[in-house]
Image (tube, rainbow, N blue to C red; front, side, top):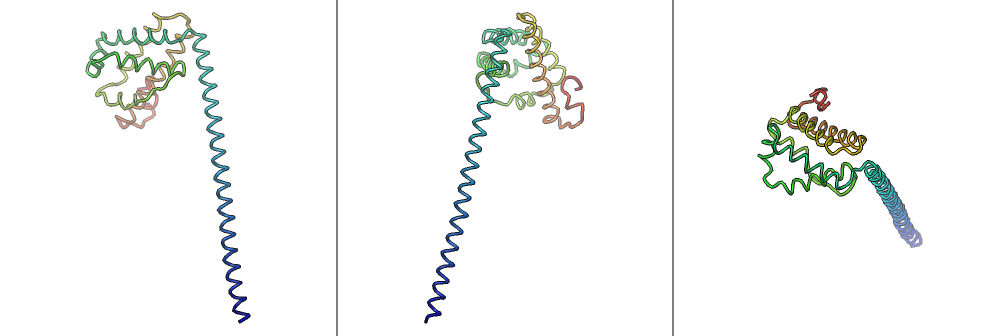
Length: 198
């Protein structure tokens, strides 16, 4: 009887110990999870703060060069006026855009994000351009030539012209490279070099 009682107590102690260790492990996991969550929140906060600093610096630099909303508005309006009457690009755009007002508004938002870090742009330029049959280096070079001509007409500060032209070329390079990879299935080195080595 005495041994039986001791056996039951032993089983109860083991059961309590098992519960206690499970509880401790669970508590530690929760502490780690909370700690990881806190770390992730701190990292996200730091990233958000850094992004705000970068955006603020980008806007200040753009302002110093005269790249403001009025400049972007004029750039987009004048550039697409050229595009619409261009023998090469006009038909490509006319086949896809019938209502120009929304497109122009969208492009102003896009360039506001690119040049000033303002607003938000959603969409997939790569997919849209890759879906255009036959579009290639020739079209991107023509696009860039019209864009740079518009910049020269609007030029106030040569540094602004150079900056915006560089961003435009980077975009053209990126889109052309993406088209070669995604639409054409190319993986060769020349396909990766955009306008320079298409």
